[in-house]
Image (tube, rainbow, N blue to C red; front, side):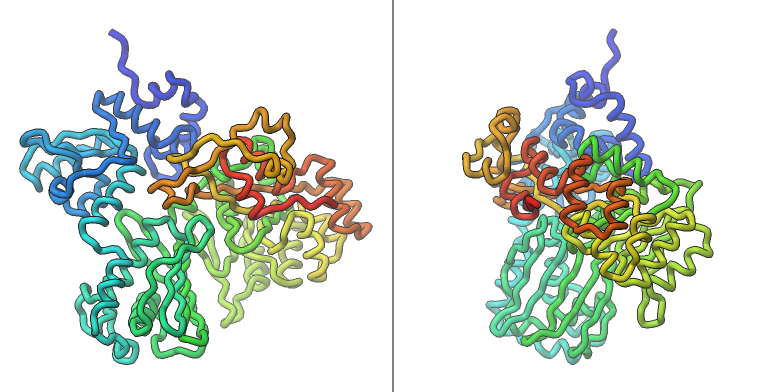
Length: 570
């Protein structure tokens, strides 16, 4: 009798997963503590649906595609929202006394035992992907409980209760003036955070205006406006968030920065809170730092195969400076942390100086900059060198002192990572020289510069092949020969992507090595455009070219690449 294949074997037999990919996924699973089925999806070797179908085949259970499935409210009510979210289980239908539920992991016996105990009835499991189960929970329970941020704001708009006294009278951790955690403002603020996390937002913006308070979420890099809060609720909402961030609620004239730590379901989240005074009151921006998002390997960053090998060779050098450049929100921190994760072994000592520390990395010594006590980048780097590190991360080279200390560290045998705010890789050289760093020091210490941007990726659920117009192809410098072998894709718009056609983001890169010819040009004080031209002749792909490569592969669209990168003809 033939041995029954497990789901990895089934995927391998179908030609969807190689043995090498399984080994790489196992390594990622060991490093991050996730299951291997999640690792193969995170590495994008298979889709979550393909993995779920293979698991269903292995266990001989039906697979359910939940994309357009609507479940009766009477079935949904059988399992509470908290149990559904906590255990990743969705009630599906009844078969006599048996309740059929959809799960992504049929081997999790504890979940079935818990449901049998709570419901006192037999449970049968069908299989769905983890992602589709989560979306179906959001869709069905959101409809039933009516507890979205928008619906709560509607309810509060209709009521005549005046919340403005809260800002002055609040002195405990509830935003309703009492200790009841179910107070309307508490629930509204909690729901705003929960909704932002469910929608995969990176930031929450709460902005007061003359007649309303606007709420916006930044999703995949674009701001999306939600239901506005009535102006009279602004003080109460502001106080609630300030209390959570341990800020002074009485301070209204100065800027304030704080941090909120919370657990939402099985997620541990950090929210970095910034408060600034504006014409119509204090504006709040909360950056959502999800620890799961930072647990990435170099493979997941989106390098082309050639750039991946080049970057790996760069970070394996014993000393020198590697710079990552790009505007705020272009994924520089994620790329640097991925490089540090790759280098983080028991044989290496790694120290970082960050302002602030966004994510905590196990096994790495992280120092937070505190300007108010004189603990700035230069002071930290100076002390770092006495700690005998192998690798140093300097959050940003902001001034000549920080840059000089970083260069000194690289010249004394350390590998130094840092960031700069420049538009492309060659401009980083000019930026350092403008700061006051001598050209010969830049040439002798910097070993590589990587510029990057983030482009939205086509939604995997509603993607469709499409043919760009001749004008689009011409604007993107795509030749007929390139178009003939391209896999152009576009999202139609669905629930999965909030009708945008995009879900998630991927980085595009420009990786410049410091070659002998480029070093010579720096000594001769050549212009940025000349350095860029030589770097391209030596094999550097500019941001636009890497973006177009991802367009041809069907990862993103021409519009997205044109939005974040243009081809400069020097």
